[in-house]
Every structure is written in C-alpha cells, then in structure tokens.
Image 1 (cartoon, rainbow, N blue to C red):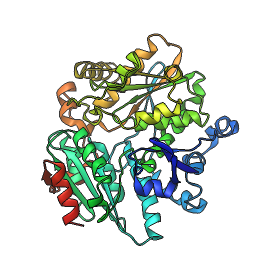
Image 2 (tube, helix red, strand yellow):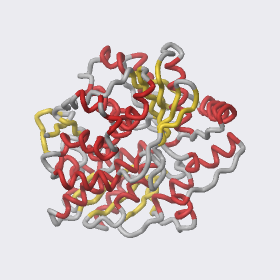
Image 3 (tube, helix red, strand yellow):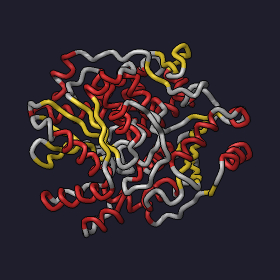
Image 4 (cartoon, rainbow, N blue to C red):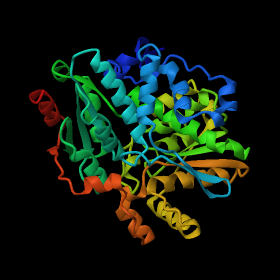
Length: 432
C-alpha cells in the first residue's frame, strides 16, 4: 500500500518512507491510498481470535510492502503484552482501560509500534534518525519508553513548561541515553508548531534525518485502531449497537477508531469528547473550522487548539460534512463538569476516573440522552495516578502508586529550557 499527502494526492510514498519522514515535504499528513474492509467472517469470529491475531490481520494491509509477515508478527507480540479490559460502569456504559502498559497511557501501543518499525528500518539502512516530537502530556513518556535504547534513533521531546503533570514530566525527562527533553516556554500548540517548522527547515534537515512520533506519524496513529477491535470483541455479546466516546485532543485516537469502522467493524456512532478546547465541537455545530490558542485545563493532554488529525477524519468521509455528521459528534465540557462526573461516578460505583476519562464519560452520557438503546464505551486513556493532584482534590482519596510509576518518581529530571524556534534550531544544528 502507498500513502499520499493530504496536501497533494499526487505525492505518494511507501509506508517505510512515510514513517521515516513523519510528514510530507509539502507539510501534509500522510494517508493510506485505500482502506480495504476485512471479511465479514473476521467480525463474526472475532470472539475466538487472540489479540495478536486481531491486530495482525487489521494492520497487515497497511504495512505489507515494507514489513515481512514474520517481522510483523514479532512486532505485534512485542507491543501487545498487556491487557485492555472492558469494565462495566453502569447499565449500557462501560470503559475500555488503555492504561495497563509500561507508561500507563494509551499511547504505549502506538509509540512501541513505531519504535519497532523504525528499529527494523534502521537495521537495513545505517543512517541515524532523529525523532522530534511534541507532547501535551502522555505522548512524551510513551515515546521515551518505547524508543529507549533503540539503535540508530535519537529522540528529542518538546513539552510545555508547567503544563504537564509531575508524573508525566518524570516519565519523559528521566531516561537519559538516547532520550533528550526540551522544556518549552509556551503551550503544546507552540511545541507542535516548532516541530512542524523544523521538518521544513533545510538548515536542520541537511544535518539530521528527522521524523515525528506524534500521532501525525502513520506508525503512531494507525495501531490505535486495535483498541476498538479489542473493545468490539468484548462487547459483541451484549447484542446492542455500539457507540464509542473518545477523549480527544489531537484527534489521532478517534481517527484510528474510524479507520476500524471503515475496516467493517459494526459501530453506530463515534463521539469526540473534548474539554473547553472546543474547535471541533464548534465545527460540528457551525461547519467552520477555526483554530484558536489552547486553554489550560485539568485534562491537559487534550489542551490542543488546532488538532492535526481532524483533517484525516474529514478525508475518511470524503470531506462531506453531512456524511460526517451521520457517524460523528463532538461535545465540549468544562473542568467543573469534569470534576462533577468524577465525583458522581466514584460515589455511585467507587470507580476512579481520570480527568480525560471523565470527559469521555460525559460525552457518552450526552449522546445517550437521545440514543438510550445503545451500548456505550468510553476510553480511559490514562491511569488516574498520572493526575494525582486533581484526583486527590476532587475525590479526597489516596491512590496506591503502581510499580510503573514508582520506578520513575525518585529519578532526577534532566531537561533543557528553550523559548523560541531559533533556540530549537540552534540546538538541533549544533548537537547533530
């Protein structure tokens, strides 16, 4: 399969080159030239398939020209070594827990998949690759963990100073080796803008071979479709139409869910649940896409004012707004509403939501007000321990620190502070 730039469909390349480049030369995101539905028997028999079998069959068409069958099976086995349980919260409402991996965030799968792909590609070509990535929270830790020690790859992570949680910061600044953290004065949008600018800066790209591990990279984005297939396997027995509500920031996760739908997964609707960074909810209400500066919230991983992957979602629906509205809705919620949801769920069920999962829960409940006969699944994208101050303040409880988190808490933060793109450029050129 080939991939084309969403800025120019005539620009095509392989999966391998799309992964290594991260973003097309014309600054467009790469998109698969076709998405072939899986056979109906796949979904009919999904309950007897293992996670590895489901993932391999779902991703194979997207990488088959560049990764041999045996290597792909090995990669799938490497990245799917933890559980993705579906937990019932209340009648017709459940959560898919995506936080049982090494950094306790949903991005572990995509980051590890991409690291395995780049590791394989670098074995075949002795040229060092620099992974340049911006994070609003969990991406940095997942990428740092996934790429730690990978031969031929250096990782440089940009994160907004003071706008990630203490645990998230520890997870991306304490590794050393081939992982470098740059603390940026500004927002996630500033970090992402710097990364995109660097990719098109000849003074940098003549010195370094750059790629990105944000969800703009196809190897980070596409494997997230596994989550929805795993959820479908576990929820099929309930015999109701399935609705997914996804806490959304840069919109890569929900976009991957829509790819799973295109593969043939029976699903009634997708809800993109956001905090007050409401560019997409406004678009769905008004039909106009108007980016704006991001606002800091307690669900910081979703503090994005210009979500990169929404253009991919529009492409999945052929840029047809009416068609998009048939399968896709988006709602926005305040910090106050988020805290109220956390409190309500805990008081009734003793289940502890993190702020992002709480936003997902709210979006699902809003949709079900007019679609009650559905089985709703909202995604819990990170363990609540990663947002301990908010959880403790909101619920007045203490959480036991899991071993994945405990091992980084006593480590020393190592980062460099930058304020401008010029400082990033100087760093990339002088340290190459």
